[in-house]
Amino acid sequence: MQAAILMIVYVLTAAVMQFIGFLISQTVDAYLPAAGLMTFLTLFLSAYGFAWPVAVWLTKWGIVKAGYEVQKEDPRAT
Image (cartoon, rainbow, N blue to C red):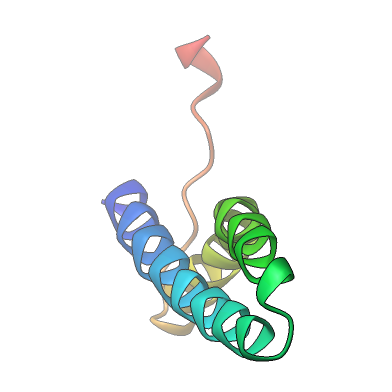
């Protein structure tokens, strides 16, 4: 169940970061039209990488705040 919550939080976090990147790229495009597309592509791709650690942190915080224990990886699964 915690893995499903993590994936949902990741999708939402990535979507928020994509929107913020879009707003930043629109602002850059208004002042420097030649740099707008490169700014958008850079922020678009980097949002996925930055969203994962943020989603993991948010999920762990939420699980602990709810009073549950964070599940660990099963050592027998390897």
